Image (cartoon, rainbow, N blue to C red; front, side, top):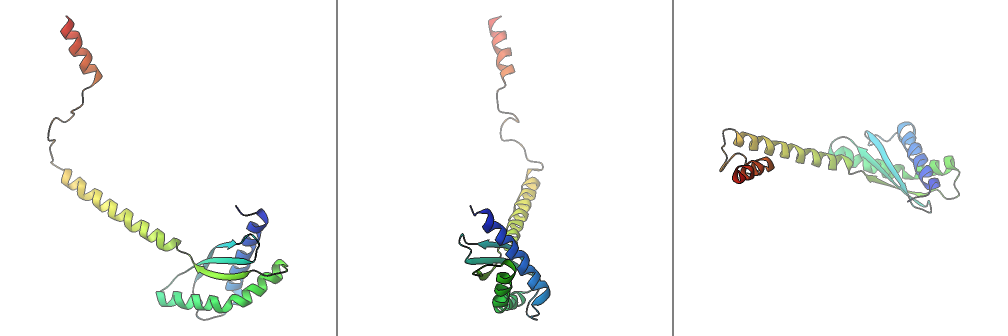
Length: 149
């Protein structure tokens, strides 16, 4: 578990980076980017900035290149605004959450289709034996009561 100071610094780095991308970075390759998370090492020397970028794979690749080229400017601004002796090294990492969510959506859709096919097969089907093959306690009591009389 990270210390509260490190967590606070990570949140501030997230805000500063998002503001920089919104207002100061004017790279035409930079697409629609959302900063999703920042993870800072315990010694505050390295920061991994997770982002999502929308668009085609080519546009996402261009966004990755634009973020890499803007890393120095963003790092210097983070150091200035936070007043740190050493500004952390920044690494931009594409966030896998949207892709994982898409895979889960696909799996849920496949399960729903399988359930629908099974329900179609069940229409008009009959039991191989009795509809309720289990003995009930009340049935046993009535059998025993009749046998003792």
